[in-house]
Length: 366
Length: 70
Image (cartoon, rainbow over all chains, first blue to last red; front, side):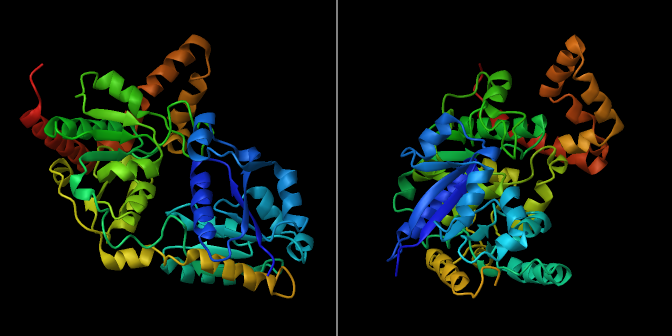
C-alpha cells in the first residue's frame, strides 16, 4: 500500500495543539502516514513565541484560501484533517462539482473541544466527508441532525461518523509515578472564564490564599498566552491575570508565580490542577492528575460558559466548592462519566480506517 | 458579555462614546477597570448578590487565618 499523505490544518494555539496531538497519534501507527502541518493564514492568531514553543521544528506549510482549495483538489493529499472547518473549506464542500471530485482529498473534521452549543458546530461539519465527535451521546444527536439536513438538501451527504478526539483519549489508569513527591499546584487560566474583572480577581485571590496557606508549595498561574498574544483569537482575554496581580495583589507571596509554559510541561510538575474551563480539565484527567473544576466564582452568572460547563461536568465528580479548593480536597473523576467523554486510545487506527472507507467509495461524495 | 452589552441601548451608547477623542479614552480606561460590567441587571438579583457576598466572605475568612501581618 502506498504511503498516505495527510494535511493537518491549524491557525491558532488550540488548533495547533490539536494538530500536534493527532500527528503524534498517527506517527505511532504501524504504517504511519506522511503528514504535513498547514497553517491557514486568513484566520491566523499565533505569536512568534507560540510558534517557537509549540512548533520548534517549524516544519509547516503556509496556506491561504486559494492554496488550501488547490491542496484539497489537486490529488496530492489523501485527506485533510482539521478541528476547525474554515468557511472556505465548508463552502467548497457544499459545491457539488468539488464534493463529487474523485481524486480530491477527503476532509475529516473533529470538534474544537467540548462544544457547549453544538448545533453550529454540527452545521459547520456537515459538509465534511467524515466527522469525529464526542461525548459518545453526540453521535446519535449528530446522526439525527445530519439526516434531517440531508433530507432537505440533495447537495449534502451525511458524513461518516466516529467517536473521538486526540485530546480526549481514555485517561491513564494510574497517576504519574512521582505524583506523591510533587508539590506544585497549578491554576490553568483561560481567556474568557471567569469573564468579569471581579470574577477573575476572586479566582486570583483564591490562588493568593492557597499560596499563603501553603508556603512550602509553589502555586503557579499557568497562562494560556501572554497578555499581548491571541489578539485575533476566537476567545479574546479582556482582564489578564498578570496585570490584575500587579494592580491588586502587589504583595502576593513569592510562592505564587506566573508561567506561560506549554501545557504538557506544566503537567509534568503538577501535583494538582485547578481550572474553571473544560480544555485544561480534560488534559489533567487524561494524564491521571488530581483535578478540580471550580465554577462557583464571583459573577459566575455573567459567564455564558459557566452553566453549560456545569451541565457537562455535573456527573464528573470533580466540580469543587470553594471550601474544598482552599483545603485542597480533591476527588477522583467518576468512571462512568469518563467512559462517556473519553475515547479509546486506538483513535489513530480508526482515523485511517475512516479514510480507507471514504476512499473505497465509488465517488468522493459517497 | 460584550455581545450581551452591545445588545442593550446603554451598551450601544457606551460603545459610541468610547470612540470620541479624550472622552472615549476615559470610557475605554473605565471599561478596562471593569466599571461597566457591574451595571448588568443580573448583579441585582438577590441570589446572585448572596452568592457573591458569601464567596467573598469565605475567601476572606480563609485568608485571615494565614495572612502574615505586613
